[in-house]
Image 1 (spheres, helix red, strand yellow):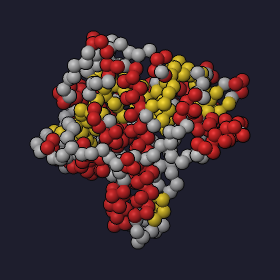
Image 2 (tube, helix red, strand yellow):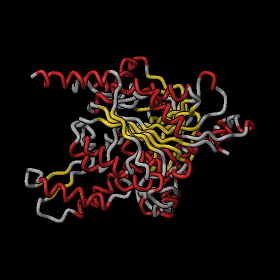
Image 3 (cartoon, one colour):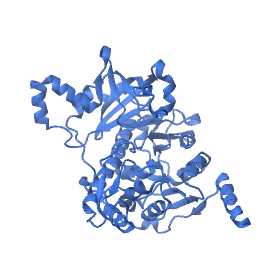
Image 4 (cartoon, helix red, strand yellow):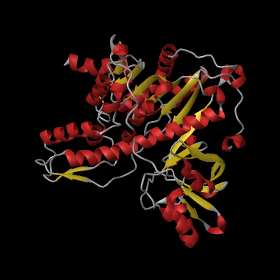
Length: 457
């Protein structure tokens, strides 16, 4: 009985003191593979870019953002139309989509109380928004040119839908919240206004930024610029996938792989566009190393971000991550991410589930399972919960194996406990990054940022 009481107390003590079981990286990890070629182009879900310039030109200078909020009382309709006014500082075509920079984002006075219930972290509202458009999402350019001439009103309605815009009373414009939010945090303290140590691309969790901002602040205080990206795609719901236990899982696996790869790609495309924007605005960031850091949901997309930025990535940190996103979605105690697999047999037979998971990892091109072996030459640190049921612990073990057994800190905690402890680990994470990344000398003449007005040239 005493031993049973001592075990949870010991775990609690280890957790509160930040103690973790440390695993050194496999000594063969850095030499495990050869330099790999770029992923085949068809590995990345296609995006339509033919109309981006036309769409960009229609972005207004001032608009109203329609923001989703968490509804405490489903019957309370006052939360349905939460509006925030914004100024568009800059907009343009970056990477494979549109990027818009917002400032002076303020709620209407009557709705100010709702700002604490925003689904999107309020810290990211004054920042960047990226959106791309799936291929074949609209007619051919030739057809659209004809519609533009013959049916201008229809063309305008079509374009406004693609932009998420709608005409409001008194000629104001409203923009829906669709898109990936980002914000650049520049070096602070003695490093403010100076050369950046490097650029950290920080991919956030579903829990907002409360537990992650201490790490961001620790890094900026040491001279790092940090591009924070809201990496959640969980609120998009797909049509359910139905299966029979005895059927061939391959067709379903292909469909699920397309859905998941498309979501992962959108975050990677946003990171690609965000890095392009900040390096154009801050030339001193063009040559510095990039570190990809992912937290929970962000850790699930981080390998794809590291792959798309591959040539510049000097290190990777993954907190609460895992591999095989289909398996994680179906076993997570928090959410299935909108990925619903329905077995017609009412139950999910273990053997059939395993066959589906095995078929899925053969089809997915952007799952951490597929990409991590390509990243074994990059220094990596994993922070891992030993009793995690949100990103199941064995999915974290699979990530560790696929990434070539990098350095790992394992905490006797679940997912929530790991993030509750995270602010106390900010110095530890920053120390590891500082040690892992070799500084690059950047000419001081390149320090001055480009005026925003010149970015459109």
